[in-house]
Image (cartoon, rainbow over all chains, first blue to last red; front, side, top):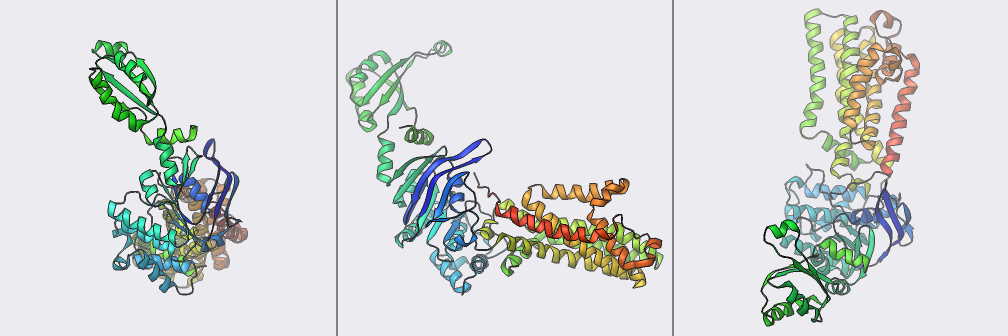
Length: 314
Length: 241
């Protein structure tokens, strides 16, 4: 059982702050590192893997600093995001080379076992350059497992995988977590993370935005205020009806700009909603009762970035 | 040294088109020398000119550039170096192995063909073949260490290396005597000059730096290897995004 601890870790590249004062503990089980692209997930994983020195703060594995300590790789298995893998070698040769680089007492047996775990023995004699994305991912996984490490770090492992490959890898990661390994993987897709991660760490713009189990994160995300833009044939009447609706917390009448009016367009309503599931059921009924025709109902802030940003600013 | 790192390096270095490129240079050298010998007969002065002007000035540095940068550069570019760096293996071991594999390639395809080219041109007369073979081996080692280091510290190692070999050593070195003091080619010529002995002056085998070239070659070999190892410890891995 191993624990990774980040204590007030920051990392900047010139004037750009990639990771800002992050403190988190990654224990046994599967942890998902969730955040939009460019949030600093890879930088965090590189620091946890000992490839990058924190500009400030400390990253430790069971109390031991990771930076510039080659010996820690006996306890860490890394699945990198990039696909470069010594083309020209077969899957077997590649995993065996990794076993030998670890100076394992019986590298052949270790390579065989790792390829069996990822179910790649059938294609192990093919050149890695001929593998599909999913097969490459599994062979990368085999190289990370070949020395049976207690800690497994995976950088965006599901990128580009088809649904079947995704399920296989999820099963595998789940099994690794069940065995008591400390498994951390990064992703920018909540659904992906919540299917296998027992704990989720959310990172946004280099900051640690939230942590907890997936239900807690899901609740935070769905219960946040939602914004809608609504166009109707009588915005003013709809606004007065909406303000009486408990699931809406604010209504703003927005007039059309001059060029929009010239095109015959009218204004719109910006509605702030506290309980979106009640609101989306109440809105059509309310419009019907008041004889108002709805032309357009658009969620204004449903991008992943805005969801994450809410978690940071809440 | 690590045997697995050496195998992986040799496989990627000698795989596909790079092997053909590496082989082309010694083949051209030997064909050129065979042609010169066939058309003009044995001539020690011409032999020294060809070996200094083509083998030492072009073949060996270009081989060193291709083998030195190719031993580690592509792995850094495509990210596969992570499989070496995520092992309980000292960075210095990785670099020393890379330099050794590159040097092995340059010795086999640069120094040995240079020696053979000398034999083709003049036989064993005045130890010209031996002199240039040893000089090619010594400069090959230094070039490999220099270009492995360049590949670790810069993504533009090949361009920088070409500028050093073609512009600094070959072009500027011809017209600016001071530039020859910082030329691996000139340092290795000091070895050839020493081995040829008294006849060196008459044959045109002369170095701009004299015997100080030998310790300078050692400094480059050891210094660049050490620095590459230090820089590999802090190599920043670039992710896909």
